[in-house]
Length: 148
Image (cartoon, one colour):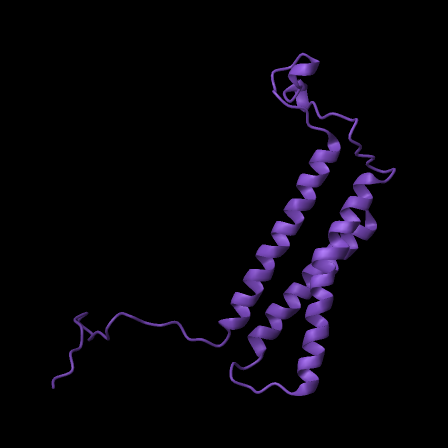
């Protein structure tokens, strides 16, 4: 559990670091070779953590002796609301704890993929000023028109 939580916190801190750096780095500043090398190592480490370490730590925790989510342990839910038909319930399928574990790890991948996309959108849009489509108005609220 500790390894999963620590790896998740480190990964989220690394994502936050990219967002903070995007706010302070000017848009049109040239990139040196050294900066590019450091950035590539940082991004590789970030994605290694997000797509490798965190999901692995979740699977190790769920399979380990603490949670012990195996395929032979079925989920019935509170009040047996998820009890399968084969066991006298109403749900037409059986759901094991291993299946739930796999759904959760798929969700972890999905969350990090969404964070990955959001991080690059923030990076690409850094320093851009919002485009104003409304025409300039006078103090009376009427649009200013330039005479030709």
